[in-house]
Length: 425
Ligand SMILES: NC(=O)c1ccc[n+]([C@@H]2O[C@H](COP(=O)([O-])OP(=O)(O)OC[C@H]3O[C@@H](n4cnc5c(N)ncnc54)[C@H](O)[C@@H]3O)[C@@H](O)[C@H]2O)c1
Image 1 (cartoon, rainbow, N blue to C red):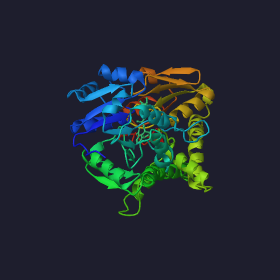
Image 2: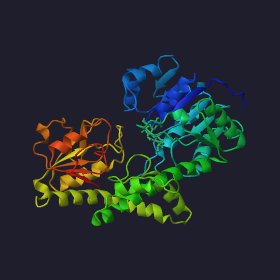
Image 3: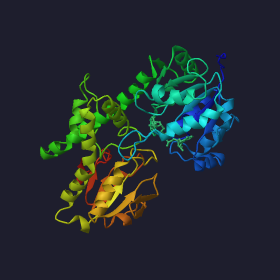
Image 4: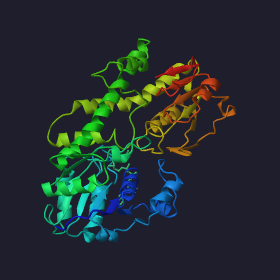
């Protein structure tokens, strides 16, 4: 195998929420990056120095290109030039809630004509244990280049948290290669840009690490959501309980309830694990339970709206929904629970308005909604404000002041001085 470079030529496949920040990090540390995305719209926007991600402003996109070491396109022929190929494509579920690896397979197949000796391929997409060794390795080896001999293959889970304060380089980087030489090559590349490396014994361990992290979160948030009903029945604020319990200096970690778990990761990854377990005839009842809790959340929220607005019927009510993305401060709508809640409200005959600084238009079935400007006038006929996503920089005091009742599923109104008309879910 060839001696590894110190300044690498990196090919990043998939320039989304994961791939673009990773490209930025490698660029910042003096590497050359070839970014490939099959979505022409994204490549065109990058070429016009425009942003499609909420974490990037226009000038930040411009900065990515400032050293002439970032090259983007939709075709794979540049792969011949690179030392390292990092795959960051989506790993969604199919219609039967099973892993849909068509993007990973597609990306691997696109690479084949351009692969050459000495290259390292790393999968970063979240996936079930075994993907690298059972799925990716045979595809790559169909070229005749053997993993651990002519080429290297590793898995390194992406742990970025879009919309948060965490800087990518400070998030410890887990890697596991198919062979010891694959691991050491992957470690060498990533430690050139990440502050701390965590080397594990195999890709399977690294794949499982990611699923454990996200499943733990799924379980804990779902558990909190499952406590909402009993707390309401007992006239207890779960939020107050969590804050009190969080003062225990050991053995308790705070997780918060919400309108339901959304996004491309937390509700998806545990089902990858469930699928793999079933393949081995092993049950994972915790994950099944969480899925049930999550699926029940939209009805629970709509029931709460109905109860709050009684004696008015839902079909006589105007509800203003605040926040529709799956979490705060991102423009990501994937698996957003808000879509299901709004759909149920519309089906019940509610007149729904919404506001979200990141989403101008929303299509739910045949209905198209447009974000309304936040003015006192627009709130005049609103019966209830329903906060589903707690974006920063939203004037929450406005709804508390101008709408009769606010149902707050995120404790977004915690800093509003007088919130007698706020119902915390
Ligand atoms: N978004 C997150 O917060 C996050 C965090 C950690 C891990 N992950 C994982 O990282 C992976 C990517 O997630 P994301 O949020 O960046 O998705 P994304 O949809 O934002 O980006 C993926 C990109 O890959 C492109 N793509 C699809 N097939 C391709 C192909 N064959 N060749 C080139 N490009 C292709 C898509 O056009 C898209 O732009 C997923 O497995 C996800 O679970 C995501």
